Amino acid sequence: MGTYLYDQAWERERQRLTALEDLFDDTTRHRLDLLGVGEGWRCLEVGAGAGSTARWLAERVGATGHIVATDLDPRFLSDGPRLKVIAHDILTDDVDTEAYDLVHARALLEHLAERDRALSRMVSAARPGGWVVIEDFHLGGSAGTMFADYFAPAAEVGLYHRVTAAFSAMFTAVGADLTFAPRLPSMLLAAGLRDVRATVFAPVVRGGADAPSFAELSLGFLSGRMAAAGLLTQDEIDRVMASLRDPSSFITPMAMVTAWGRRP
Image (tube, one colour):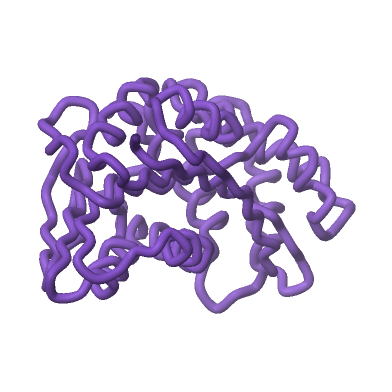
């Protein structure tokens, strides 16, 4: 894919992906529940990451259902009852067409320069009447300005803006995009889906948790490159890390835009 900033081989990448799951699994599961995922469904989970959604789907679809979970590097995934894992590139590898009741991807399209092509291929995998559910981050730009209102301590709001701008710049430099997610509903309509709807969820996270947060791990991996590019100073990195570990701090790290539609 070429635009993924993180490294599956990093010793803390599984922990980072699990921290993402902790933030957003409830929102994802609530939406899939409302769409009626259940006994006998065939589901495709694209860019499955650490695998929590794929495993949950495998429980929901019962003995007659089936889940295919894909990732470019599926090292954190494993086969299980009703769950098949494959190494797969959604942009180039073969896709079973009109095969699935649900096609789902979370935090994937933001990393792809060819996101329209990836979405088109995912839509082609859904059966007529099947659902396509796409979730991606919104960070930076106007979102960063809004989320700064929730940042504490208030004295560090300027630093928050610098950090969100640094993340956006890092993504933009490789052809990824942390600001495109508000366009997801329009993209789904343009891809030919019906009954398109969307929601936005933005968690407010308290600092000082026992385990490092998703924001802390994500910044930790990229901090050296941000400093080398002149996007943040080492002092700024140290200050935001201290804030993320402070129980009196709060941060809204990003919003998750969830958009869904049904294939005609």
